[in-house]
Length: 313
Image 1 (cartoon, rainbow, N blue to C red):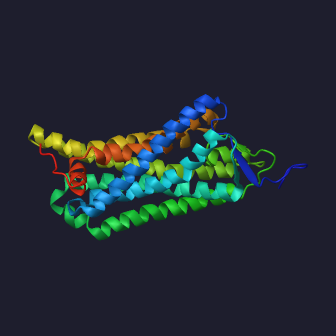
Image 2: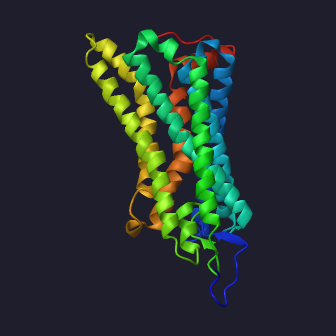
Image 3: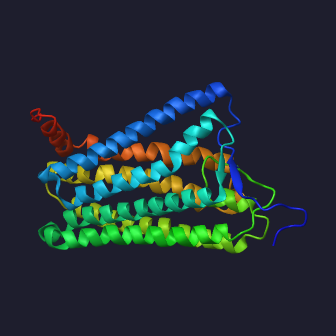
């Protein structure tokens, strides 16, 4: 029910970074645009190279290519609007457009969480059960992992978007963020949002705590197996295959957990906005850099694609 003398909202305005002067916003625009283009370029290179080079047709690189595609869709849903808002603050967005942005943001964000979990399981099987790796991580199993990850993302996003946009929004229409996210939108609703807060918390537990727990268990088993390897060189090589994944997992889950798992009483939208920059702009760039562009197999494949001779160790 709408409050008396209030008007139903048909569009929102993003507050974004309007509290900064235009000089600072221009610097942010150049920096974020550069990072965005690097992210897109890096992910396109990864997907193309993995597609072209048969040596990279393995489960690990299949998951990596799916993660790159998902990260690209994720950033496309958020960053263009953010860049536009830096040049012209208080950009309007129709309520339908806001719902669409939130849907794709949640779908691919949750998909990324479960893809990282699948990649953790892949590393577990490769190190702890190498003799059965090709059997366990066959093509059909990999496709199922990817399909389930996307299915969970679509399902959870549908629940969240439906619960948020069933609420009435009246009078308050300025979103204190640079994109449509659940908590900033709930603060604009002109009705009790307790049920929505509970739904948001339960979804956050399912898509953050559950995957983090599974990844943690995988790494406990991985580390215990690696420590049993006799040679120091063997242990170093085994750790190296997991270092990239572990780095991205810590940053990805860490930033998301700070925002979505902390109590509402401790929530600061200004602080959340700064942390959001990390996992919407910086983290997607880390994937191609940490995961692949520093990876010898990928660099060798890139050299071959460019007609150059791969460097030997």
